[in-house]
Amino acid sequence: MIRKATMEDVQGLAELMSELGYPTSYENMKQRYSKINQHPDYYTLVYEIEGQLVGMTGMIRAFRYEDDYSYVRIVSMVVKEFARGKGIGYELLKASESWAKGQGCHMVTLNSGNREERSKAHEFYKRNGFVGSATGFYKKL
Image (cartoon, rainbow, N blue to C red; front, side, top):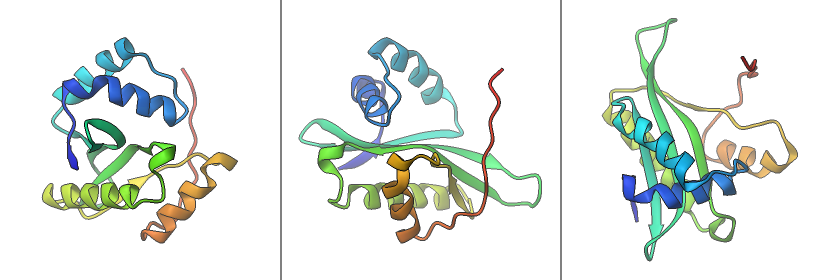
């Protein structure tokens, strides 16, 4: 079942962030998600099976400088390893696209790290209509 995440999902979200490669404690996730959950431009979907979170997408609605269209950026997406290959990621992507359309957005974007362990994710995104078109950079402050 796909649904909007709630504060009761914090433990499951922490586990999913750890699965994604970002070890996260319950307390850290509680602090993060309490901020995210209150912001009107953020939206988090979870995929739940028998009371256990097995996947999620975290999104931000944003505006562009270069044209008049808004878009949604998927900033976090993960499906637990044991549940991969069962259509859960596909369903989360479709639900994310549906939310974006409902917000009046014309595009969904995402970044995925250029690491070997992300190669299957890259192929998944391509199979689902995403086009690789940018190189990302970051600088820690």
